[in-house]
Amino acid sequence: MKVMILAKRRALFEILRSIDPEPKTELIYKTPFELLVAVILSAQATDKGVNLATAKLFPNAHTPQAILDLGLPGLKSFIKTIGLYNAKAENIMGMCRRLLDLHGGEVPHDRAALEALPGVGRKTANVILNCVFGEPTMAVDTHIFRVANRTGLAGGKTVHSVEQGLLAAVPPEFAMHAHHWLILLGRYTCKARRPECWRCPVRTACSYRPKEQEPSAVSAKSTRLAVGRALSRGRVRPA
Ligand code: SF4
Picture 1 (cartoon, rainbow, N blue to C red):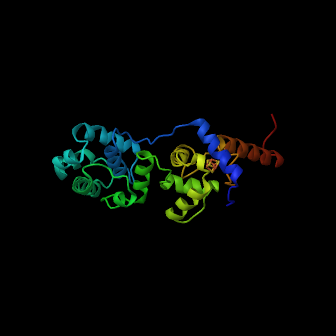
Picture 2 (spheres, rainbow, N blue to C red):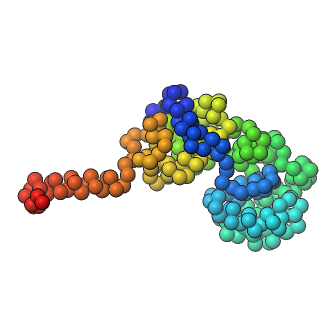
């Protein structure tokens, strides 16, 4: 994989910015606390699934005390459609207790304090620092990890190395929104099973080779080749 030169990195983000100047998380929330709960729930789950659950949870409980008042079984009843909900419910209860005990019920603007909350790791802390506090962090999830490696923006075998690579590679003027642009690119175009290069807006900047072709173009080409071979063997009469 080639490492992308600065001009191409800049071109890639200029394209993404021109398509979506103010990208946002697809998780639905109204307060920093709601976002924190939603991000904890989103581990190994889809944003759509989380939004369906929180659409029922938040009108009933959207503060640390209100969630504690639900009790563990009550909280589980709202989130049981989400994978790993038993562990996530325990973490959310612990997180709410700690927010009340140490932070006056508020989401702290401090990486160490965030990462000390149950259920909150570096990626979740990065999302909160970016979306709530406007810090240019890079919350590397499975989509960003894949896109960074494929495009040549930042190669790496670990989430940490890709995060560090991206923090160095993304030009400063794009740093605030870069993680949302890359997540959306990975979720909807540079998909895990097969990147859809033929319709990708950043294909001219991306280092991935060979680019994937549109399936219908591939099947038309193989049909032409098969007919050509049959004609050359005299098995098919030309029309
Ligand atoms: S051109 Fe292909 S590999 Fe590169 S970002 Fe787009 S979909 Fe991904």
